[in-house]
Image (tube, rainbow, N blue to C red):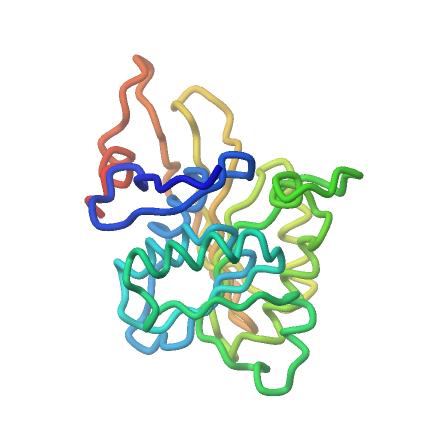
Length: 238
C-alpha cells in the first residue's frame, strides 16, 4: 500500500512510499547533509534515487535543477507522486533508465558538476524483488556506478557516496582505478563506543590527493538520546 510519510522532522517535505518496498533510511539523509555544493554546481545527478529522498531534501539546500535516475519503474511511479505533492516539477527531473546506458549517451558525457549516490551495500542475490534490488547489487554494482560517474562528471566534478564500512577498501580501490581522488571522508557511529557501520565519502574526478578525515559523526549518546548534531539533521534544522 502506498502511503504519504513525513521525512523525519522536515516540516516542508513529504515522501510517498510503498510499505512493501524498501523505505528510505537515515543514510540518505546523512549524505545530503554531508554534501557541500559550490555556487558553480549547476548540474546535479542522483544515481539510484529510489523513492527520491536525496533529491527531495537536496531541493531544500539549492534551487538548481536536479536529475534523478532510477531503473525500477515501480519506484519511479511512486517518486513522481512525491515530486507532484511537493510541487517540485520544475526542479527535479526524474529519469527511468539504466545508468550504464544513460552514461554512454553522448549528450550526457562530462555533463554534471555533482553526482550523488546511496548505492546497494550488499552483493548480488537471487531475490530480484524491488525491495531486495534496493539493497543488493542485482541491477547495478559499485564499479558500474563509479565508472558511470566518471563518464558523466565534468573534470574536477564531485562524487558523493554513502557506503558500507566493511567494503571501504573496495570503494577506495575502485575510486583510485577510475581516477577519483578522495577529498573528505567521515565515519558514522551509532554511539561513540560502537564500531562504524557506514561511511560518507566525497571524491573528485581527476583531483589531487588531499584527503581529509573528518571527526566521526555520532548518532546517539550512551544513554540513547540523540546527539545535538544528529538532532539538527533529524529535525531538519540544517
